[in-house]
Image (cartoon, rainbow over all chains, first blue to last red; front, side, top):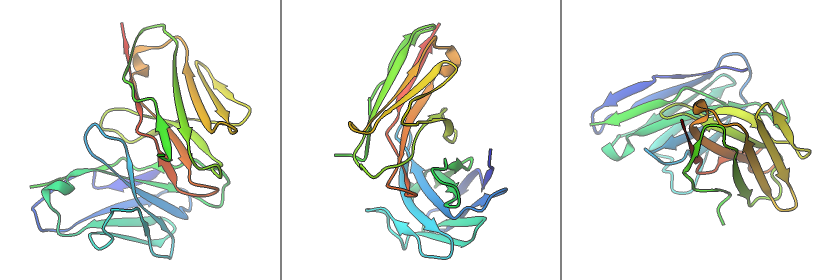
Length: 117
Length: 110
């Protein structure tokens, strides 16, 4: 299957700093990338959807100025958590899909475990 | 109504049991349906796509009822390694975002 690489897998940062998470599709053109967040013992929650070359669409309740998403190419999307706080500590996962293929599944990155101290 | 709703679980079953998970979705324009499996602290992995005609993959059978907007997953002869959280996933209309259900946790005991 297609490969999506997410980096870093784990990051610890100080409160108030920013953290950038990268999501790369290695062997296909990801026209759409999704960013999810998962708190312990809870389900994946969609944060935003980004289409290559356009602004991300954020889900209700997700602050676009806090969670900056860039999808400048068909193989890379980034999520930057700005001015991180301890409550932002969570498991962030990206997934990628291609609109060039009908009814395609989504391919997931390995996830990033963010801890804000 | 939530976009995707699943049995809350958890399901605790003995090895060899048959277990069924149910899922309903609210968007009648949804075109793609999947079951994903997520192990603790790992990313979700596709278990199987769900087709209108129903489909089977070994011990796993998925069914879709578009009229009722209902999806099911049947696992026969449960194995210890089947223990995981099973996520019902539906797209938000054609080519739309994938929306996940809250997942149903399955624990298979010896």
